[in-house]
Length: 415
Image (cartoon, rainbow, N blue to C red):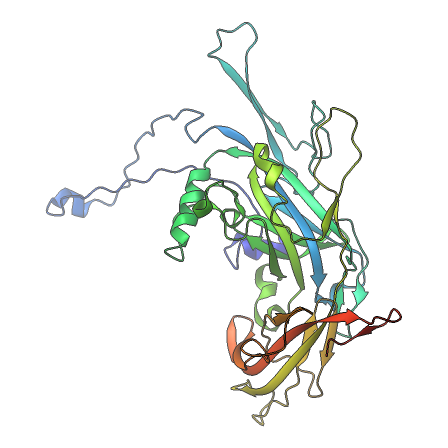
């Protein structure tokens, strides 16, 4: 932990799970007129009441599924070696620090049915199969050599085949707390305490952790009640990876380490029949062969079978309130536009000044290019450098589907 010692000292966002602490807080109103209370500087220690082992809830088996649909904008400094991604929840899926896997309670043989036994298996390997031939966890994508996007960025050639992960984990069933938080989040922006650890996505190279993203578990949690479902459950989510600890501060933290499109689902293992229900059409499962009468495993990858061609048009008219590039007060800006594994840039000075993200207006081939959707309206996009605002960009973006010619195999514009 020497490399990330500052994280243990509270600098920056926590980037890994360490433990959970069970606490109970009580507040008493004291009589401030009592001189003994005002003059006392001693801390009163009272013996805590013992709690039952199952007071925090029944232990349940959870299932987390993820599919990596895209990995782009990988910084060139880490693009010379194979890269893979690791997903963890608590210590489950963590291939470096190990995992603590509880054995679910079982009735003792010869007992009266009321006694139970339980134990913890320390640092058990997730590569070992269950006794009943159930699925084992696959928490990381296969290492892959990045390809060059341009002189600044790389991307991973996922193309049609999208790698998948799935993790089994065991927690006390306190989904109600997370469900309540999801309900309240529709009213307020923030609320209390979440008892299931957040999900971490790590980009790894040469068995070293390079950059990460942190996603609250409640945002991925599944429920049969719509109001309780996490806002990112069973949806394709755009994730930007950043450097951990103090390396993420200052100019080094301005650069996106990687951009990912990922599909995630978290719920009870016994509910996992619906974990692929939110995937866009066109994906097929690639499964490991299984014998007869054996349960089906989650897919080891997803195969995208549909091919569509689009043209991205970026109409950039003006940038205002930009940071000065030097003491002259001028900026000499240029713009670089990224879309999946493609990039184009205008001419200008090659110093980083900020970035913005935009969602283009999409036109399918059977739609008319006419008002009110087309041409798209200009709007201002906030530019950021790190967490600071760095100006505005006046622009419009449109994504137009391209159809094949009727003769030959070439592609042409829809116009």
